[in-house]
Length: 394
Ligand code: SF4
Ligand code: SF4
Image (cartoon, rainbow, N blue to C red; front, side):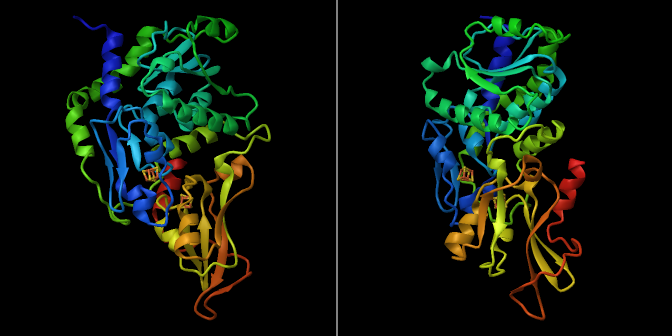
């Protein structure tokens, strides 16, 4: 039987999305045993993930490729392969302006894409995280829908709860911008009326052919690896131990995408609701200066800086994924409890690339004493990747 173009693209997505990339050295409990994170294991609808003190393993036979584990992982330790978030974001950047973006899984039989709707095919709605929803908004979408019309009959529909959480979280973030649409998880049995309601939007010149042409580059690039899908999964099934310093500190790609898209939205126009991004690291006077938080942070959000005989711990909010590893270490391993993630500030402050000084301390002359001398500047950053990140972000 000959497959249609839609079937071929869907199959390529299905095959390729089932490959998950695991970077064990980013996993919080593998970096430090004080971490309480177990989100991926709890989220998996197929009990395909298992974690020990040394490794994070995925059973390729059980894995249904929904991507829920990747969505809930704050550290980028589990990432969905092609199409990665930045590839889907690029399609939206090229084609979403003035159109309704509909995220739909391959089991959804809906009459799109159309000139007024851009369909983004995902293996499962649980694969849609905040960064993809915010990317749609930043690309000028006039509406954002997650089509759950096929979910009621799906064998792993339990992960719809993950999609709901992502929608709620993304909407809380987007509520700080009054002019952008919010996402909606709904059954679009017939998405045509949705497009009709958006008739005031300028008709996009992007056609079905253009849509698939945009996909074609990504799909062709993934074809070879899709054919070798089972080999990739077998590789992922091997225990992947990793030393804490085996990899450089880096910001997960989807967190970078989220921050970039929020900057593209410009200054916020409304107060906004509470979001996880508003959790900011704070260090109190109980700090012993052990710097364990800095040493184990996987993103390099926490850094040590020096200014003469003053030493400071600084935090760069845009790099922080709010994984809470630093808090767990400080509370459980170091028993200091000096560090907490507390809700504070505006969304702009929460995504700022400027480091903020959390605590200063005079070294040499009176070690251990906090100091209120005005901070003169950020010298001798211990994490040089901070410069690289800032340069890339500009
Ligand atoms: S950091 Fe990510 S991979 Fe590690 S336990 Fe938490 S959710 Fe799972
Ligand atoms: S600063 Fe703390 S919460 Fe933020 S990424 Fe680093 S370890 Fe995680």
